[in-house]
Length: 127
Image 1 (tube, one colour):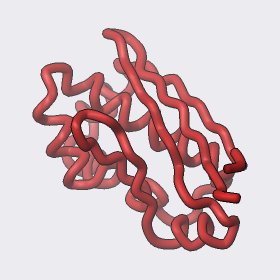
Image 2 (cartoon, rainbow, N blue to C red):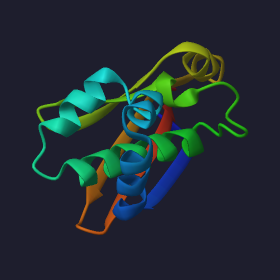
Image 3 (cartoon, rainbow, N blue to C red):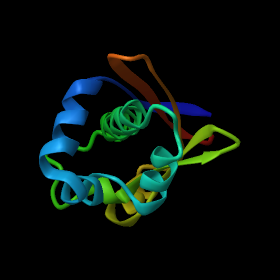
Image 4 (tube, rainbow, N blue to C red):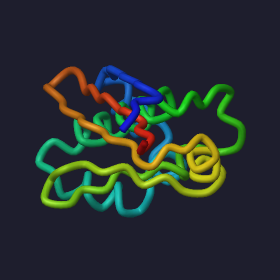
């Protein structure tokens, strides 16, 4: 198993809250999948959950070396929660790019406090 990419991100929760407040559903549907929205809405700290998802997606973009972000890569990365453990699901052109690079999985961890959310993602290629 080889690590081929590492990404980390920290986000101010107030920044994400301000974007949700200003742009509402348009912002949510552009950045988050319906499953992510459903998951965040079930959390006690909804704003912090959205912030952690944002940080996780940014960390995934960094570990996959997605520069310029042509199109809408936000919709191509979904952070799934199975038993409250986050898993990365990559779709579309980013998935194709992963496969071409031999990346078999992207691991992610994320967390938050009242003010900040953070995430780290690791792209792995099987030997």
